[in-house]
Length: 605
Ligand SMILES: *[C@@H]1O[C@H](CO)[C@@H](O)[C@H](O)[C@H]1NC(C)=O
Ligand SMILES: *[C@@H]1O[C@H](CO)[C@@H](O)[C@H](O)[C@H]1NC(C)=O
Ligand SMILES: *[C@@H]1O[C@H](CO)[C@@H](O)[C@H](O)[C@H]1NC(C)=O
Ligand SMILES: *[C@@H]1O[C@H](CO)[C@@H](O)[C@H](O)[C@H]1NC(C)=O
Ligand SMILES: *[C@@H]1O[C@H](CO)[C@@H](O)[C@H](O)[C@H]1NC(C)=O
Ligand SMILES: *[C@@H]1O[C@H](CO)[C@@H](O)[C@H](O)[C@H]1NC(C)=O
Ligand SMILES: *[C@@H]1O[C@H](CO)[C@@H](O)[C@H](O)[C@H]1NC(C)=O
Ligand SMILES: *[C@@H]1O[C@H](CO)[C@@H](O)[C@H](O)[C@H]1NC(C)=O
Ligand SMILES: *[C@@H]1O[C@H](CO)[C@@H](O)[C@H](O)[C@H]1NC(C)=O
Image (cartoon, helix red, strand yellow):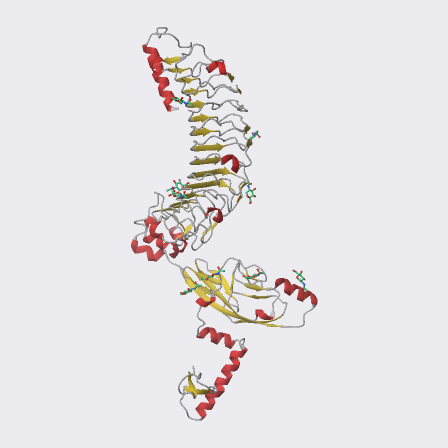
């Protein structure tokens, strides 16, 4: 546009310098000509038909902003040297099938903002030298098969801002040179993978303001050369199929202003060369652990304005090269270091516009505030009250430990909870904890499974920490451990349950089968959780005090008897020995040389 305006100005100047009428053979009336450069400019001249007398050797003809209604073959047939034709902002509604067919040297054709409803087949035939075609802002409803089939050298095609409802499967056939395609503001409800499959040379594809509800499998599978894909303003998009991006090797991907609520983890799986990902302005409230784990080369991640409230531990797991993280304008209370694969690669972090709580969880940012960039918008504390509104960069080193602290959880009301219940009854154990930040409470079952507020089924944890067991079963008996933890540490607490089995009536039996085996926690890998907790003395004492582990009780009772007995015999106070003889096995396979008794020394506590 700038180019033509410059020429326009130049034309006007020349026109003023050279006396009107003295400019030789043919410049149409109302038009400005620059004969040396073979330019004819008739912009905004209220022309309702093609001007007469355009010199046959014209290279550039600008008819923008007139009132032309159609283009016929005869209008242009003589202009075989034309390289650039601008027909934008006219009222053209009809193109003759071979309207441009004599313009073999045409490079640029602009038909923006006209009234075209249909491009007839053959309208662009023979235009093998065309590199730019602008059809945006018309009223096109459908792109027919073979419309562009001769345009092998087309690099830029604009078809945005039409009423397109359908792109025929072979519409893009022949566009092997197309590098960039933008389809926007039209009423397409699907994009056919076959239509796109002809665009072998495509590098950038922008699909904006469309009403498509889902991205289907393999829509883009033939676009191996595509480097950038933008999907913007698809308000109905809710589903991205796991194989949507199969066959692509993108370096950047933008999916913004849609209705997706989750990171499309499996769809992103094969994009291992992705360097920039923008998922801003989607209603994604949680960045789940490892949800981007295959994007090992990702350098930039934008999740701006997504109503994000939590970044889980390892939410950025796998992003080994992340440099820029933009989480502006979300609902994050904190961003813990444990969310990152490694923060050492991070250069720029935007977490402004979040209700941040300035406690020990943000210390890692403070420690790096001299080297980490904030893009001019440092994070600002929202809580606690006394530092509200202060930027993280404004704290003096000496005061850090006064502010950025956490308070370890403390479980309140620690009286022993020991319940007996009959099979089928509902049971609940309280566990309320205080701490700063608010502790997360979960329970460990006697079978060493982790029970959280997310556990579904018969056994679950209520939001305030109460363990709830519906339809208790004998196998539920045992010690339950409540764990309250926050960034400051954790606190534990024990409760025991004894369920007595009673004869079941048929209905209860049916209910029991229905609720069988549902201690599964779908969100956690819980196999090893319990092993992290050492069953220390306290645990054992508490357990036995509550008399739940009857077997252990019996063993201890025996020990006690032995102890009393051994004291009576005047032996060592704290030691006693048990002699245990292995049964002698005949033959050379007998282990050990001594063959006889083994001694076990036990220390009484
Ligand atoms: C494209 O333009 C060149 C000159 O610029 C010309 O020689 C050639 O014939 C044109 N191609 C076609 C297919 O007309
Ligand atoms: C396309 O959508 C726009 C706005 O939603 C509407 O005004 C227009 O009539 C639609 N066009 C067609 C062809 O459906
Ligand atoms: C987006 O999703 C929400 C809930 O899933 C739904 O209520 C809303 O209507 C959707 N918006 C659009 C534009 O489809
Ligand atoms: C994918 O793209 C990267 C550059 O972004 C390139 O190095 C790599 O070779 C490409 N892989 C394939 C299979 O084309
Ligand atoms: C982060 O997102 C905001 C909001 O979209 C934008 O203004 C800003 O430029 C982004 N920052 C960077 C470094 O990209
Ligand atoms: C509880 O705290 C201890 C040390 O304070 C730590 O070793 C342990 O991993 C924590 N457990 C949980 C589940 O956070
Ligand atoms: C069995 O379970 C259902 C709920 O799933 C409940 O409505 C019904 O009362 C239960 N029956 C008995 C006998 O507990
Ligand atoms: C619990 O998990 C096991 C194995 O992980 C599975 O076989 C079983 O169906 C699950 N039970 C429920 C109720 O989800
Ligand atoms: C749980 O984690 C352990 C190691 O931490 C791993 O070996 C195991 O495969 C995981 N189980 C599941 C179901 O993911």
